[in-house]
Length: 510
Image (cartoon, rainbow, N blue to C red):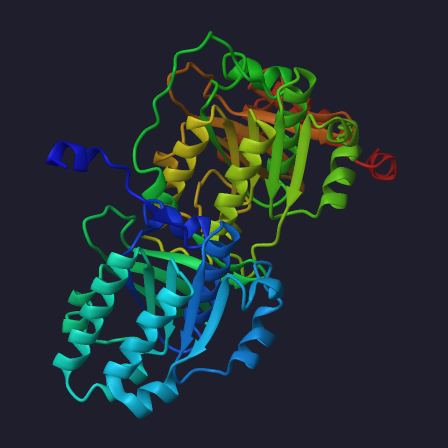
């Protein structure tokens, strides 16, 4: 076979049993390779090894799991039976568990090597997992003996077509010689963020293969090891956008749509900044309802409201969401960001977008999504990757974020730097005048589109959001703060204030 034929031969992969981990490894472990997984006790090494075995057997392969000074096989089965991948009927058939410590103690490294070779041969295993490599290392007598054992195991199993995973406690020295004896090294860790602990995985070596470098978060649940590749590594660049017909995606609020030239550009990202109660969520619901009327599938994905409260809030302003939800035109998903991983939530969001073929998205509550475990250095890159992923899917997205101040013109957000990432910014705020609160709306930014920058007053009633026809009412309210009103403006403003008063107060004033 010449070099050209070798280069064209497809690379065989062995799935790890975790789709996210397969993504990090560019498809999985290489067939016949030897890989080392290191980590402190409790980081998930044994679960990862078993998940590999059960997944491989489910795909038609055969596997052997060899234990050293770890828990007994019976106790391991007790812990594993809660996992979705666990199948008791295949144990002793296509998946075999072997104890190797007695052999190691009685016959040394050579005896253990013979046991491993024999187990692979007799059970025709195409996957071998050795759990507890530290015991082997301590029994080796010298570093040279241990390296020779690892090298011989790798050579034998490569010729046998058996992919090998060796599990050991965390090695502090990343340049330790044994790492050179294997085809790849994976590190599992548990990192503390305040009172919270986050599990991470990092592939520090993968011989001759590309991988998603850096640390990625994972969790252990009923599905086993669930890895969520860092979003920035999946969507690092701008997506290719196909030019489409000129159209706009409106909010269904006539005078607001007029201010932005008929609506938002398709595939754009818009940030709604505003203080609590300023109307961000309701404006997002108007956007989704407008799309539902045009048969444009929409998704509400939020952290600020429960689903029943969201339906009730929408009904109070004349937006009945249930018929659209029942028809599948609108999907409502509410989550709590407590103890949640941002990458896990982002991956779930993208799965929902793909499954429901979403065209309009409202992501209600960026702050609880991002701030808990994402540092300020990572937040801009994470949001850039998220908007790129949504744009690549043809989604027009609306995101909300709270501001620091309740009143006044300052835009002070907790997540700094996001203003430059999104395409459009709508600012909602309160203005106080003579013991009354007024809502103001302004367009601060719109890429590739003309817009009206003047402030507009808006109100929320049982008919939904209503934006004033002109900027004059906003000017009248703001000049109450900045400069004296003319007599005509005073009379107009007094009438507007009195109309908002309860009838009992109007009678007392007269």
